Image (cartoon, rainbow, N blue to C red):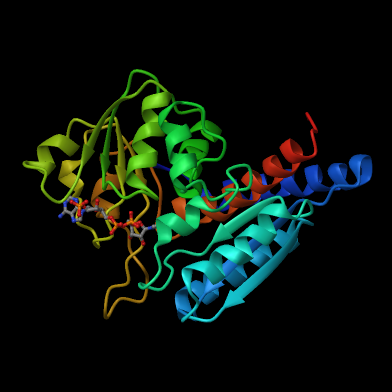
Length: 288
Ligand code: NDP
């Protein structure tokens, strides 16, 4: 392997330690404890796990976190009523509605009900609109984590040719907008892109956000490229989850690459914590 590993696990650990120190300062100097409320509708097992991981991560850095569990058959108005209360509570700085909500609910309408100053997940229509305007309040945590990882490793973005494979609202599109804001020349690919391999071969920075195990082959990687793999795929018969990129072969050509697990994934929760600390500082008028 020639590529250097972009160690998301270690970077996230460093960021969490920095945040824990900042939280101590906020408590001591200003009497402010950043607080995240997570709204969980239904009992999807993966969502239940994610929500408890998020709460644990908050508590580990000294923040507060509450989980609001609503039954799977909740109505749109019942979910919004909970959000109204959280929006109005000055002690709550960040609100996250765990994705996905049950199918009978209108998720975009629910997210739009989160106060934009508390939308630490950054995926409401207002937050995405602000990102498009280049005035983002809070940016979706997984794409933000990728950019922060590049920054922490001192990898330049400006002027680079970036290719993002995937165009979801939570990942591909915001990742592309962030790279554009940092002056990369960005191409977004999707399931109907023609000659995907050739487009990927042009990438100095390649973002994989597809959700298909090892779909991006090693020989699609431009020599020296930086590869960010957000994919997280379980493959029957294999004891380890894999990314969207064929890791071993890609690492022979790339200059930097994120492993799966331990790359993009751990950065996501670190960014959620960071956004919540930022929300608390903004709400309390603290400039630090
Ligand atoms: P979505 O299913 O919402 O989006 C997948 C995207 O991939 C779509 O835009 C789709 O194109 C595109 N796509 C599908 N097949 C192909 C193909 N053959 N060629 C090119 N593009 C294709 O997934 P998400 O964005 O939510 O997640 C993507 C991956 O990232 C998943 O593995 C998920 O588990 C992981 N993930 C990881 C997170 C983390 O914290 N590390 C957080 C969130 C997600 P089209 O639009 O045309 O359908």
